[in-house]
Length: 397
Image (tube, rainbow, N blue to C red; front, side, top):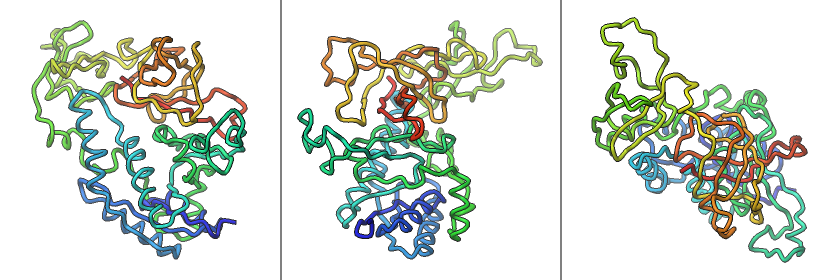
C-alpha cells in the first residue's frame, strides 16, 4: 500500500527519529533519512550527525544532509535573541518546528520527490473522513485535503513524553504531509524496538534544554548579543533587596537569585536567617528592574487570565463562540492541563482577528511567562482513546 510513497525522515541522531524511520520502512514506505544541519554553538551537532548517518546505514536507507545553518540562525536564533531583548521569553522549539522542521525541511524534501516528511515527535495525527471536504457546506479544496480526509493533531499515547505543546503552529496543510510514527508508543517500547533492531542510538540519552546551545548556558550565549547592565532587584513591596546584570537575562518563575545576590535589609548581620527562595514575578526591561516574590506559593507568581497574540487554530473552520469556550490549556511544557475558557477580549471584533484572544483559567496558574506558548486542548472525554485533540495555541502577551 505504501511502497510507492516516499517519506523523508528527519534523523536527529536520537533514538526516537531512528525508530520512526524503522517503523515506516516496515510499513512499506520508501524511506529516506535526512539530517538537518542547523546553527550550533558547542559543536555537539557533529556527534548527532554521525549517529544519524549510522542509523541510516543500519536501516539501509539513503541519507541526506540539509544545510540550514543560515536559515536557522535568521529565523530561530535571531528571533529568540530579539525576544529576550524586548523582555519576553521566546520558545525556540516552537519557532524551529514552524520555520525549519515543518517549513524548510518539507520544501526541500518535496523538491526531491517526497510525499511525506516524518519526525520522532511524540504526537499523533488522526485522519478521518471529512464531510465538508466532500462538498457539504461549501468547503473548497484550498481549505481541506483533496482526498476527502481531515487531519487532526492529538496528544501522544505516552503523556510523559507528549510534545504537542511545541506543535501548535502547524496547520491543516502541514498535517496532510506529516507522519509521527512513534506517537502510539511509550518511550520504553521505543528503546526496546531500537535495541532489538541494533540501532546505534538505542541507549543514547535524550537531549535536554535548547538544542543549538548544547552545554552552553543561555545567559552566557545571550551576553554575546545583549550587553549586561546592572539593575535593581526589588521585592513585591518595591523594596530593593539586590542587583542583577540585566533584566532581559531572566524569565518569569526563574529561581536563580541566591542569598549572596538577594538579601532583606533586616537580614544584615543575621546570616542564619532562613528565608524561602525567591522567584522572578515580573520584569521591566525599560527600567531594568526585576520584581521577585518570596516562596513558590506567593500570589504574585500566579495569573487568573492572559492575553494572546499570533494565534493559530489547526482546524481551518474552527470559530470561537461569542460566549466563553471551554478548553484545557497548558502554558508550559509538561505542565498539567488545566481547565480554562477561551474568549475574545472584545466580542465586537471580527472572527477573522485572532490577535486579541484571552484565556481565563478556572484556577490561577503559576509562572506564566510572556513570549511562551499557551496551547489549547479539547475537553471532549470521548476523544480519550485517541488522546486529547490539539485545537491550537497562541503567544502569551
